[in-house]
Image (tube, rainbow, N blue to C red; front, side, top):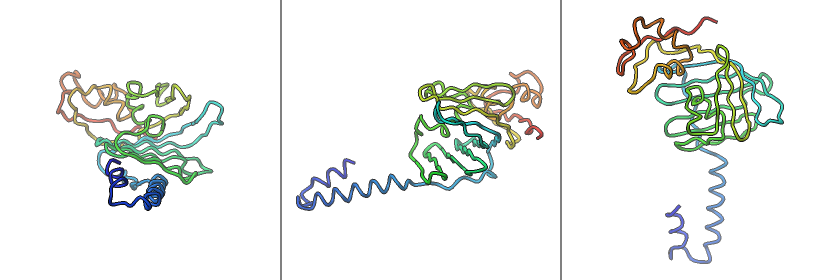
Length: 225
């Protein structure tokens, strides 16, 4: 914006043309906001994806009617995430993609979209849900996540009371995982959507023997349908 301001007030732009230039800039900015740069959805057949599928009930506001639909959450070890919420009658209501340098949310039923750079907005549920599943949200945002019986969960915003409740089951995951530095066994279990006991079942022996940074550990297969 400094470059634009410098150009706008420079002698190279005659005073009589500055209002026209200003109007053109405004139109360009509005057009840019209305048509954000969207990236195509990733292929979930690529390596590194953990895919969970299930059902969800979404309430955008406390006084809104609950919306029931199907939920898909895919998280890749490279930091990419995909969240899709769909209903039988309206199709996809929200499709959110995020990575380390980009985020975007599409609302096909409303014919609108949003996108941006590195830091996704805190208020958009679909962009914050992957962190909720990993247990990251309460540290940096106003979102709270609670695990219930089996694969059931609740995810809500402390200020707006927007809420998503549902159940997710892991349907696809890699066969192995490389333990990272300072990584905790509970966090690994959360990332792949199973219990610590299930992780221990496929890695016999005391945790201290096999759960070490740099070690390749086995992951349990997805549960049967």
